[in-house]
Image 1: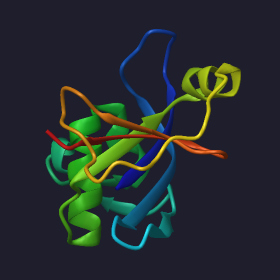
Image 2: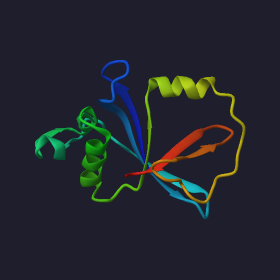
Image 3: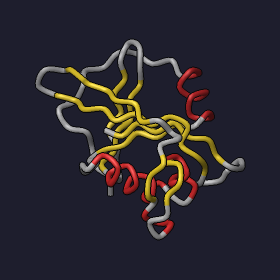
Length: 129
């Protein structure tokens, strides 16, 4: 699961920079997770820039798909799921009154992401289309 914290360039914009990049692996049988942070200033080739090198977080300035492809190339592994959150999303989560729910065995589909609400977090995951 690729966890993306990003900032929009303008209100209502669909592009911006990735401020935090975390790769998480989730084992649904043991309910365990491992996480690795990727430095946003990592200098890598950006596929949608024709392979030119730039900071990894700038791949998000073109599109989410470009950013995910950039991270996949950097780590040498396909990314099956992602969660993306901007500041307005964080505000919405803080303002939500959520209750605990069991973790479902599957993560959902691109058109209907699975929402997992726990006592200390809300996780929205969708497969990469």
